[in-house]
Length: 453
Image (cartoon, rainbow, N blue to C red; front, side, top):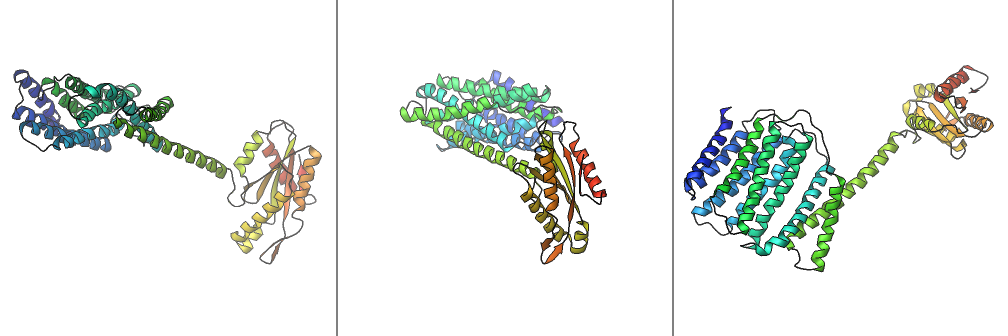
């Protein structure tokens, strides 16, 4: 457990030494500076087991990437390196941001599985914010920035990425129960981000020098981020999604920026084309997924209320329709087949299924337009039919008559009959229970297969 204190102790030693040694040295700025980052990564894997392993892996990858970039950049100050080494170090620095962005939600206790739409929303918001802020910053600052356009791009990219990280930790800070983990992680990200902004400001004014005291902000942020994993994440948490207004703003601004670039070439730097196009591309993907999801929900809703064997509505659909009957003039009929069980016993369930499909077809053909026929399960059916008593009782007789002649399947003649329980919708309620009682009364009555309550 003492390992977690090694990086903070070395950081304090580095800070104190910096107060007395203002000029860059190999021992202080190359070795000790980067060793602190390395130890911060190593101690992550010794942190308590209550940590989310994905969060640990992503933070370790983030700090390792930043550490490699720092080592290359530091080494270039004391030795001659190829010109492309600056680009390589900047690429490693940049990898820090997406890794931390993935780790923050899991590190702050939000361990639930993140859906595809949530990931797309985060990406659209992040890219849109990047495009907007980059356009505003680059448009004003880039002409004044010393150095090549590549150096200017990366120097401005870091603060933009920091804005996204700050938004992410701010959401965690506000929506999660406050504890030491969130406080340390938020403080580490904030210090790291402020150091990026300070670096940009110093560069713009030509005052930045390698090894100055402001460089301590980066390793202080790294140590705090690593140290936060030794604290427990909050047990209770609340989840919030990115507000649709921010998503809409990101999507709206992307074509606006592209239109300005097309109408006034050179007004905004070409760098913002990539995030704006990526934002629109992801927005179209999200729209396609939402449409597909809505269609699937509609199909699932239909399937949930449909009988698989006959394709008729099922019991759930019939009950839903009964709830909406209100005081309309209508009736509920429950039908139960007589003589169906011997069919299953003698010929098997496959033959029984064929019989049920044919019976369902006969019932459907005998019903008036607007009537609802449902299979309630087994050999039981239900019908909702509109009209006065005389009309609905005629429908009951018509349904009974459909089985007055045998069902013929594969040369086999199968004789069936149907008991019908008829209940007029009189506003008294309990239609299903009353129709069920009427149906069983019809089955008990040998002289009539239709009973009305």
